Length: 288
Image 1 (cartoon, rainbow, N blue to C red):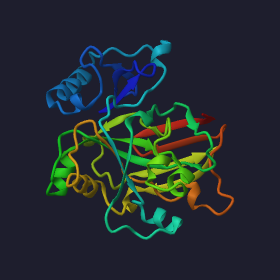
Image 2 (cartoon, one colour):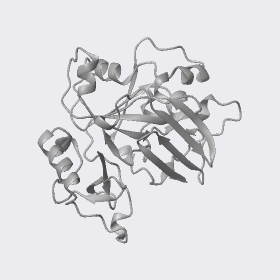
Image 3 (cartoon, rainbow, N blue to C red):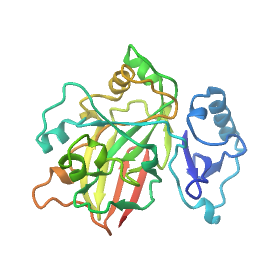
Image 4 (tube, rainbow, N blue to C red):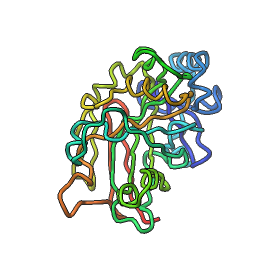
């Protein structure tokens, strides 16, 4: 299934796409697309049955309140991110291949919809783009022992844009979090695609354009630590709960890896990104 949430920020309604791509209203069945729903197999089965029966009402395309696509997941618990997780990205930035996954966190309040405005922080000179595969957890996971257990804990996948401010991240001391948690720095969606529709998360192409120019063109096959390994690894250090999100890293092509002068983002720039089977995002950048 392709689950989504539509409507004004903070008042989104749950929906699901039918086979024709028409959004169908789920608000009569469930309160929201969130961890509580993803951890409830009976509720998910109910959505599948209602979708198959054709009984779900279509959202009114003329309704202005339904025109915005919000993040496909509400009430996110935590966002765990993996740094330097593609061989080609490590190469372009001159970094050594990590022996273990590099971890940092993003606050859930950085999440916005896939087509919402992204704000260039005040004082920023090095705002950068990063298309990423987001993994959404669907069952509680702690001390997992196998890749099979890890993949079984995944509810689905989405596109994440891990926007980063490199000077804040790298040049201001301390941890990376300063350059990762600025307002609007994690567009998510448009859909949460359930795991049954993505048989191999290591066979997905990722692409990103800036002002129409292709910048990133990679594949999850190039991940240093594949999805199953990442989930299993994280479960050794923290408990993962339904509704938690893992951003799994970005391929080569970011501004940081380009020759000088590096083409960092400015107000007025437009970024578009897509992952096979997971939809497409488009953001215009404006000054905070």
